[in-house]
Amino acid sequence: MVCQRKQINLQPGQGYFIAADEAAMQDRIRYEIYPLIKEYLFEGLLQHAKEEFNSYFLNRIQQPLFE
Image 1 (cartoon, rainbow, N blue to C red):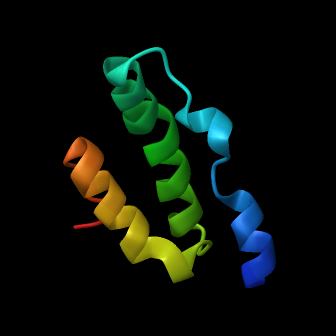
Image 2: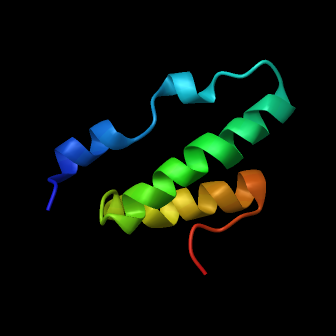
Image 3: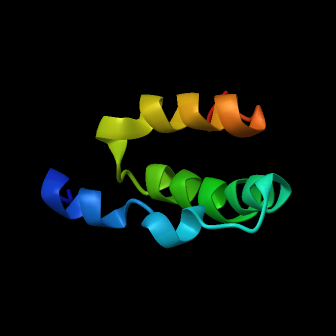
C-alpha cells in the first residue's frame, strides 16, 4: 500500500487547472482529471480523499466517480 505522503504527490498539480476559459476547464476536468483520479482510485490509491474527489466531480461536471 502506498503511504499517504506518497499519495499526495499523485494528486494533480496546478497545471491541470489552467485553461483559457470555463468551457476548456470543463473539458480538462472531464477528459483529463476525472479519468486520472478514477484510475488512481481503481488502483487503490488516494482512498483517503475519495469522497472529496467524488463531491468535486459531482459539483463541477455532474458526474460521480462511483455509483
